[in-house]
Image (cartoon, rainbow over all chains, first blue to last red):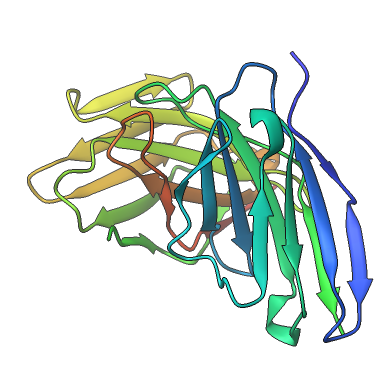
Amino acid sequence: EAGVAQSPRYKIIEKRQSVAFWCNPISGHATLYWYQQILGQGPKLLIQFQNNGVVDDSQLPKDRFSAERLKGVDSTLKIQPAKLEDSAVYLCASSVGRRDYGYTFGSGTRLTVV
Amino acid sequence: GENVEQHPSTLSVQEGDSAVIKCTYSDSASNYFPWYKQELGKRPQLIIDIRSNVGEKKDQRIAVTLNKTAKHFSLHITETQPEDSAVYFCAASMGSGYSTLTFGKGTMLLVSP
């Protein structure tokens, strides 16, 4: 099966600019996650979608981050305006949404804010 | 919410030795514990997982043990090889279709030939 697709792979922006990331999950996977992985740390959940509804966005900095999942398939994550501390790898993952299943991660987008 | 602690942060072993990575979790409701391997610049990949109804699971050279009473679980790699060098993450969740994974901070394993 095809994996989780993410783009772009790399992005360099200046602080206060905006940026958007795209994710296409594995076909049929109802649950989609965005994680932020700062260098040297484990992935931290930003937002979880079940189909096109938000299940958990408690750790999403909503003053600057937004995400949507149109039609329950592709998803975009946006940062506006970006801060230096947003430099990280943004990982998208999907799962079937049933009990006790691990995630399949995409390759991630490495964001550098200068 | 759930908190997962992982130790050690780095682990250096000689090829052929065993490696053990330990994690503790805080939420007694957690019942699903996967381990991910992340090679440099690549995506995390699931290598093994365990559910709370079992105490140990093996897959060739890797094994995971779970002690629900003490709320800790461990990854064991035997006969390590240079290609085992990577960052390993443990994680925990309540295992429902909607529950999210909380990750540890990772262990960088270096296997020297």
